[in-house]
Image (tube, rainbow, N blue to C red; front, side):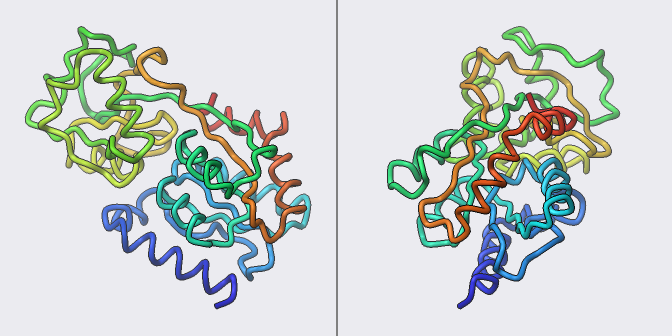
Amino acid sequence: MDRRGFLGGLLIGLASSFPALRSAVAQHHAMQPAPGASDGRGVLVFAAATLKPALDAIVSAYRNKQGAEVTLAYGPSPALAKQIENGAPADIFISADPIWMDYLAEKRLVRRHTRADLVRNVLVLAGRESQASAASVVIDSAFPLAQVVGAGPLSMCNPADHPAGRYGKASLEALGLWDSVANKIAIADNPQVAVVMVARGDAPAAVVFVTDVRGVSGARVLGTFPEASHPPIVYPAALTMAAPHADAAERLLAHLRSAEVRALFDDYGYK
């Protein structure tokens, strides 16, 4: 199978593995290649789905300016890392946390000298836009989370393997809030799905990244979790060891680390 066919099969496989994501695609972040070169000859980037709005815009500008061929494939970091482990021909991997980058590094599947943290994110509690509340607050141990969640559910990613879920549970435990909602959790495949659940009225609240709430009609930020209550939310990027287009991929990675792109990420709410 050629590289284009492999990519198509990969994306279909990812979507079929995450049905909730598939149902939310039309309303929010699609798990599919961004528009542009996809003939299998250009740089292939595997990126955490939560990066999609910002990375689509950044790479689109890069294509237009440099005439470069770049294909973006989005999905949950664990699934993408496993695909790279299984031989997916990605040139660059951008994870939603260090753990899955470490996973590939330990297996010598990424080039350690190219690894760098691109951006940081902020963990928030999303709620319905119509919920009566003051401006977004910093969540502490006195925050009435059980009252906000009510009968539930509280939508969030799986703490066992998804970065957003892991950060969320760590913060809720550190603040002493986990036990009050632990039996009301609805597991979402990714933070975008969790936000869509809130916007649709399927859940009163969700633990997600602040960038996931941006642009979602019907959802807003109710509160921000303190940075000290969870590990730093960083997005490491690196070239894969088997990168088929290593030179072009290294140029793209350097661009993603530039001050120009840093400003664009800031516009989308990253830190």
